[in-house]
Image (cartoon, rainbow, N blue to C red; front, side, top):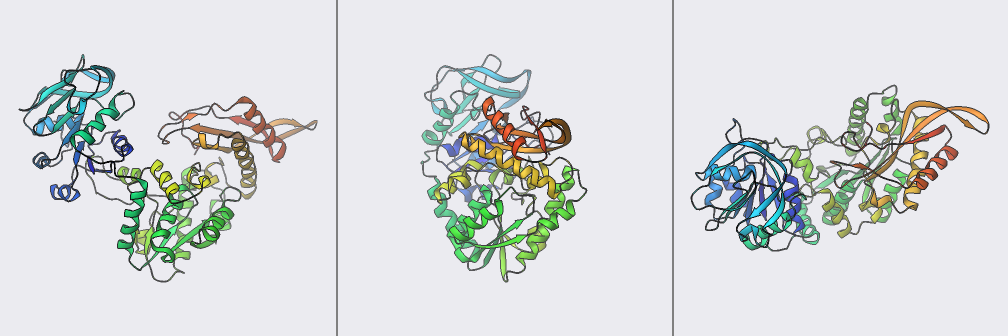
Length: 509
């Protein structure tokens, strides 16, 4: 187990991803973690992340200096190196020249974390302050043209520091550097896998829940589906899933969820058909944030009504993921565990006085997909494209009505049919249609039309933090456009969104 102390770096989740890629378990924790808690975690190594602060600025994040007395290997990255140097008696100075971006790393000692790294290699810098003087026992192991101390080590105490970021792809041999720390220095074993996770998670769920009943708000998406199957494996009939049809789902969505979970997986499932309630409350609403809030509040009301029909429930399960948990903490050591604010379940634990079960809270999205495969879920669930909680309501620009929903559902169904036929569904992060609040003049059957416009959005991405518009084949776009215009009454024009994220977002609202 590797402990990562979060000093606020934009890359801290990437550090964790790189560690786990080596089949080593790790946790990201805030710097306010007590030394006793660190001892209880029993890490084989500690990584101090980078961060935006200057070591001398007021309120700069700091972890207990006693970590350097534990006899545990420590790797400091960027700000983490500066914190280490400052804590151990060295000096950090403001640089005359900020170094940001690519840099040529010149390695002077190919040992320790730099074992096997070429003498000249590319790295990624992002810092203003630099090391002015190293603490006693440290030696320089690499430098760049602008940074005399790009890497340093104290072999006797197993302390290592990097002024650059090994976790980003721009550092060509960064994976090798991190692997050196994990295996040569910390002596970690490649023992963390989805199989071992399932075994541990099932034991933990049973320990936490005992013989009590658990409810889970099931959306049919990857996170809630995997959480449901994992919980069912652990506690069986003690689990009841509640599926709310909010009226803004895609065609056949409700039927698919019922068939898969109730009939195929034999999971207790309560189904609430509440589309009319949601549409009534959305009547006349055009502001996207109001739509989201109305759907969120109404979901809570419907879910609450269904949940109260199940007697003796003591736990509420959520598909909270690790990024949700990390981002819910303040950058410099806020509360160690804050429930994510999610449109589906926000407010439920407090209102219903239930204890939380979050079996996926230490997993990233790609790990959840791997877990789903380990649990035997079908590919169409595990690799399903993300679908927003507010559903088609935020893919209809303007007012949400039954008629507009019908038009969009048909267009979206045709789009996905063609994407799947072209074998592109699993290669795209998302692909969907948006109904615009505009009409345009057209000609159909020698007659003038004045109908709706549909936009197509298809993007590629690894994590949804950034995304690029997909270069779909022109003949595919032509087929999609022709089918939508010919087969969906009320649409006479199709356009394709070619904006990336940033500056745009994936969803339009």
